[in-house]
Length: 434
Ligand code: GAL
Image (cartoon, rainbow, N blue to C red; front, side):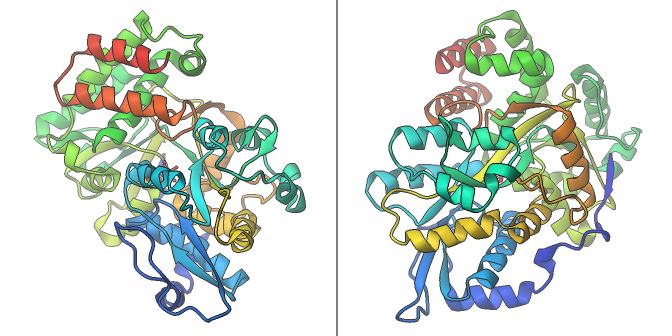
């Protein structure tokens, strides 16, 4: 599909009054790039503060997060917002730091968490307060779709308020690079084999066919290859033991994963998802496989981006929605639980859900908001989320525990750095997912 870079039917909230927001944040928060949250610069003696811990701390993600903060500040002018953002895609740095803060009894007031197995880990460790009363008070028991509600619940109790729903299985492409390779302007490939033909054509032009970043983005790519090979049922079976990780379908998927690596940039281990996506925006690479948060990287690039943003479901995954749910939790021992609850209310509010989703390339978690306020991409994603087969993302905390994901990530890192073979990788994946 093609999406024009601007969506005039859906003005995005963060573009309105961004300067005003910047001023508010400058007055109420300290900059925190790459380090732990700091004290507010100016805190009125009686004002309560809320430290919100996320990894939406750079580039288009920070801008999107600002749009949610703007809603919070409007709704809670008396609360001082403290940005606990730690950069690093998919929480690659933030989650480790958060774990040590929780272990040290130093929780933020609220933190970003993925719906699914990742959330369940925190609950099992006794880290979170239950949010059932708040959910009823906010009417979320009626307005969250069952699939989303399940992902933020453990044993029927809700432990996080979802801000948005992302789709992980998306392929993005630069039409100019495709044209230079004699290819039609499309990111839509029914099979991996169809895609390999296009990748070969781009390689012949001397440009990078497939942009890739560091290890978590490599796991993200592998996830899509597994989904293409196994289909939604087989893929989901990897996480509940009904699909044999040591079986022939996974072997075939790993062979294609290895083949795909041969089309990627050599400097991938030094790049996060923004860098890989930027290579496509700049025309240095043809394709990148990335969740739909990448839409905003294209949008933010302005005149330097291609005129059309080409996107489609990742090759071989049409009809499947590989879901990522972002949510916020209330840790036990949060210093300011009342302020944290006000943050959760802003996250759940219609304004919060709409503003953030439009700025983030996501769709609202609530199903009662309609689509009139959403951008073109978001309307298409909403339709897909309702119609497609929904499967949980491995890379983004939905499918397996953090321990298992860490083991998968380490195994993939060893393989992509050349230390192991696909045979070893498959054995290590089987062990990690046991
Ligand atoms: C995911 C998260 C998304 C986006 C992405 C890249 O894990 O759910 O909202 O932030 O990482 O950082």
